[in-house]
Image (cartoon, rainbow over all chains, first blue to last red; front, side, top):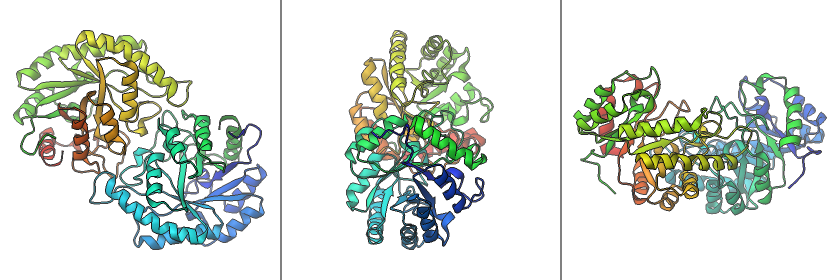
Length: 282
Length: 282
């Protein structure tokens, strides 16, 4: 297991931690401001959201690398099954992959979407998801991008996800069986899973991303009340040990949706706190 | 698998479906009103909450049976680990078991509570929970009551539960290994679990309760927006098949926390809808 006590070169900022995933959230920093602030603090990489890139994906990717940082990933494809699936879906999936390629992001995250309308349970949605992900993988491979299925906390069932555990995501990987497909592991979504270590071991070699935050004991909002590392109940070291035992040696990306706390603070304070907490608790 | 198409004698009302679990919620019916309304409609049983019984547990139990209904259970013990644990805990646990006995309830539900303060992850909380549940089981056995560990949806981690799946609850049953201990299975909490059927099979003979509602695709509140059976995405028939294959042949208890919808309706309409939906969808 890597030792981060004196070294945070594996730390990446997911820009959602500054509110960049939602219109009007956070301090409204430009991409250039946050690139410079991350570079000054010795972050290793940045993960962007499509909404902040617009038509500047290539430019922001180059600017990131010029500052000595890696582009660690891009969030995310459109929902691919369930009630929130856009029409026509395939065009938007391709556009998200193309944006990742233009940005120079090695990984694009998939939030799957929920239960397909007119169906019950998971089965029909998984069948449809596997078909659609297979098509997306072919395009991703042509563009040099990998796709990472991200299981979400079961509170997001119905409309946002049909994958709730690493084991679920692995089952889709197994069915699709494509070299461009893997799994993103987010502490917020998986910390509670008593079978996490065995599920990660089964998925060895398929982990494409590791997302940090913490689960607050008194979580007040389903989506927008994530905690800073160390403030919650997740066993961060144990989770990372299992992720690394599954072969992952990439960035640890801090992704904190926090409308009432961290998004209201000065981004400089947020970034400084991340560095400190990363070294002490992660 | 039982056929409920023409027979709802296995249907039980959990009084939370009329708001009886929270002060000021629902239409405010007395216990006598709801007993008569359930008896008129051919319900088989009723599950009560401690807060509505006060010092009338024995009286309400007798009134229920006099109307031709079973007392199917009581909700619930205090939280037994985590930040919401009352002091002194053991007295309140015993009081809840004694109330179940006075009511004539065969089963008392345990919502475990969350992560013990000062600890991370699940391990320390599970160890403490197993110790405390073992003590409670001895008292329950003396009182002729069984205790049912209820795993909750992972959104309730941190402060309300440290058991998230039937497999988790089974692991505590296995450790405690007491004839008074089993598991309550609630559709709301387990519908998303792709390993549910295999977990139930492993826990064969330990299922002490089955709770019905539905998971709405667009759930708007973490606690108080449960759906009526048929209005959501849970595969109710498949879940009941797995529960019955695990040896359960008892009541199917409708438990719908719904502050903005069902609690605002006339309880007569709510009960009539339950009967209809139970026969058609469950």
